[in-house]
View 1 (cartoon, helix red, strand yellow):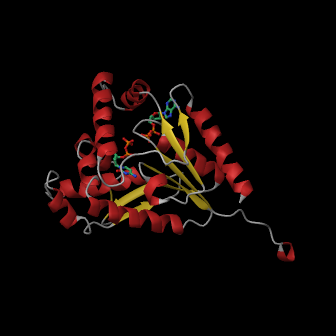
View 2 (cartoon, helix red, strand yellow; view 1 turned 30 degrees about the horizontal axis):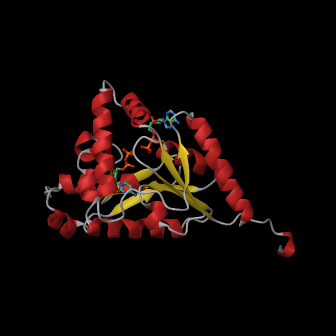
Amino acid sequence: MENGAARTAPAVIVAIDGPSGTGKSSTSKAVAAQLGLSYLDTGAQYRAITWWMVTNGIDVDDPSAIAAAAGKPDIVSGTDPASPTITVDGVDVAGPIRTQEVTSRVSAVSAVPEVRTRITELQRAIAAGAVTGIVVEGRDIGTTVLPDADLKIFLTASPEARAARRSGELKDADVAATREALLKRDAADSTRRTSPLAKADDAVEVDTSDLTLQQVIECVVTLVEEKRAAK
Ligand SMILES: Nc1ncnc2c1ncn2[C@@H]1O[C@H](COP(=O)(O)OP(=O)(O)O)[C@@H](O)[C@H]1O
Ligand SMILES: Nc1ccn([C@H]2C[C@H](O)[C@@H](COP(=O)(O)OP(=O)(O)O)O2)c(=O)n1
C-alpha cells in the first residue's frame, strides 16, 4: 500500500440465478445493501421490454415482430439496492411491469434472441460500471451474461414453497393456480433455445425451501466475503 492509503476492496461480481419465488430478489437486494454493492434485477429489464411491446401493440406471439422492435425502447435500471428503479423511455414502469398481463407474456418476449442480445449488452455495461461490485440476479447470469463472475449462486426451492411465497404477495391468490403458473413459466424459461434458465457448472446450489430469508442472506454474505478476501 502506497502512502498509507486505505486499501479499498476489489470490485466483486456476484451472479444469482434460479426459478421464480426462490428468493433471488430479496436475497440479492439485502446482500448488496449489506456489502455496499450495486444491485441489478434482470427480470425487471425483461418485464420492461415486454411492457413496451404490449403497450405499443406488438404481437407478442410473433417473434419476428418482437425482434424488429427489440432495439426501440430505452430501458434504464437504477442499481441502488435500497431503491432500485426501472424506466422505459423515461417513464417509471416499476408498477406496470408486475401486472398479470406482463407476467403471462414475459417468457415469450424474453425467448427472442434479439431481445436477449440487447438486454445482455445492457447488463454487461452496468456490471462493468459498478465501482465496488454488483449482485446481478436472473436466469442466465452465471451461464451467459457474466460467466467470469467471482461467485455464482443457484437458488432452488420446492414448487410448493415457491407458490406459497408468491401467493402470500398477491392478495386473494389461489396457491394451486399460482403453482401451475410458476411451473409453466419455469418450463418455458428452461427450454428456450437461447440462454435458458440453467445452473452454471461452477455455481453453488442453495435449496431455500426450509431456510428463512435471513438464513439465505447470511449464507450468501459469507460466501461473498470469502471470495473478496481471496481476491
Ligand atoms: N427463504 C425464504 N423463506 C420464506 N419466504 C421467502 C424466502 N425467500 C424469499 N421469500 C419471500 O418469497 C417471495 C418471493 O421472493 P423473491 O425474492 O421475490 O423471489 P424471486 O426473485 O426468486 O422470484 C417474497 O415475498 C419473499 O419475501
Ligand atoms: N436473466 C433473466 C431474467 C429474467 N428472464 C425472464 C424469464 C422470467 O420468467 C421473466 C421475469 O423474471 P423475474 O425475475 O421478474 O420473475 P419473478 O420475479 O421470479 O417472477 O423474465 C430471463 O429470461 N432472463
